Length: 457
Ligand code: PMP
Image 1 (cartoon, rainbow, N blue to C red):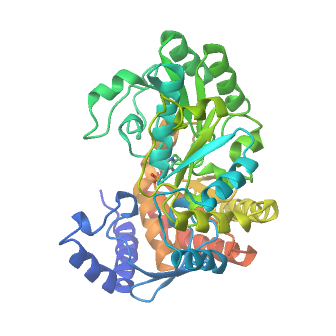
Image 2: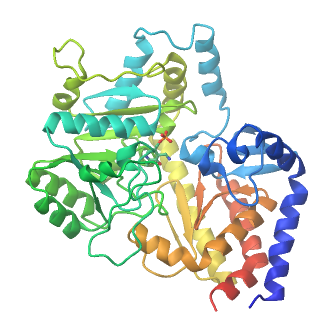
């Protein structure tokens, strides 16, 4: 039965959003003539329709109706310095007049590689590509060539990009199957399943069973050190070390996807956790806001890409390592030292505390987690150690989270809304920004409380 008071709150939030975003809706209608659904990227959609961007500056976004938002999405974690940082803009401008991509190596490439390899101890050498998707694709290919094996073990509900071998169980298996059942996303050939096995995050016993059952077939374990998409789920104590030792015992490679988690410290999450994977995939912040990916690791593995060797593995890409991205990426890392990372990680800690306090004060059940400068809220007190648990725990409040997401937009805060709410911080933010986000969060909780109370009764 619908509750009129609850329906009223939902109507009020929606009406306010529509009222504020009239020009976005008009743009969406025009765009829908040429772009399916009016957009060119699935992840940026949310109901009833996303706002259209006019510009971004620092930690703020301006939409086409002139509304300002604190940007807590930061292009899905990639803009660690927010929008249009003067140093990054300057580096792009300086390079643009010298050409953007040249089909011959540039000094910029090895200088950027030197910075990254200097920061991540497990990386002897790297190759640049154009996206995190390409990075995991080539890391997996390298592992297959190096080991001569085909099977990879991927994490249930993990996102490692959109090539076929990782578009398996992007959504976790929700059945209580002994081990997660593997499923491909629409359009991915089922044949992919011959070479992909699925393990739940934080479950070494399951990983060991799969490795034992697949003896002699496995090229690599592919995992993020934090399961980011499912709400920044941290590894249990010993989990990552356990993956390292299982990989060693079974003679398989360990591939870390640090496309997102690299922002956690100068050497990524692997340096914080003191684990050396064999290969690492990178992306997002190392491109300074431009398209980028990189994969690399042990020199003896990466040597397979050396084109002077007769059996060299091909890795191409028209825009791989293009000068513009290299310049922007280097400018970004140059101003992202340990102090700056520690500062935004502390802002993350502050926001976690403030959001938890707001939940407690409004009597709304929830947990606040995440890692470093990323903060996630789950509206449930149920356990939250892998993607299946996260999705099941969030299920009763998915619609609530959608409403809260809109209520936050109406207050000028743009968060990631996908069952959990995600807040990704950037260096233009300070304690005042965090406190403003928290103030609007509390206010939005108060407005939306009837919805969550109704959902949970
Ligand atoms: N790995 C992870 C952990 C990611 O979050 C993403 C993108 N969000 C990718 C890989 C793919 O990166 P891209 O979108 O640049 O292809």
